[in-house]
Length: 226
Image (cartoon, rainbow, N blue to C red; front, side, top):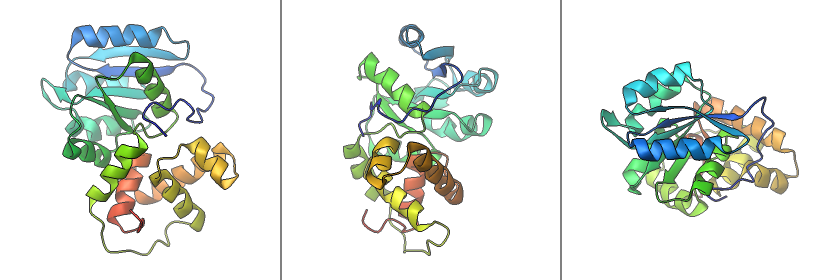
């Protein structure tokens, strides 16, 4: 699964994907909003130029996806993820960053981000990332995922009784960077069934995204091959 994989098993939605843009660069944010609004299935619901505005707007605009700049004038965007998630738990949060430093990416994953998108990416990749995040997919390349997972620090193996055998199997395939559709094909089940397994194992691990579930699983020693 690439960072811009549109074959993410997107579920049918009652309306367009609602996107809140959090970026203090007005020209970039406005241009991004125009691009998103040009898509039939995506609608920008506002632009927040500070984290303070973002925490208020995430409640009033009810976005499905938040495009969050890493560096904001009033703080660190990654550090604001827990508050944004608390106010809108169902939103997928994609961090926009000019930095690929591992510590930034690891912190974002641990905070529950759905993934990352470099500001150098094309606009087509941005819209694809929005669709992926809205579908509950991880917005990250398999190569970057493989690089980051071992950095979480593997703990001593713990009892995995909380997860079913199938959930552990799905988790291992997520760690390979597979999309829900690819996992469904590998296991010969429906995408809906895969989504249910991911929702269940995420709830058991106390995770807010597929990436956060992986980070927790690594720290608990539930993915010994990582």
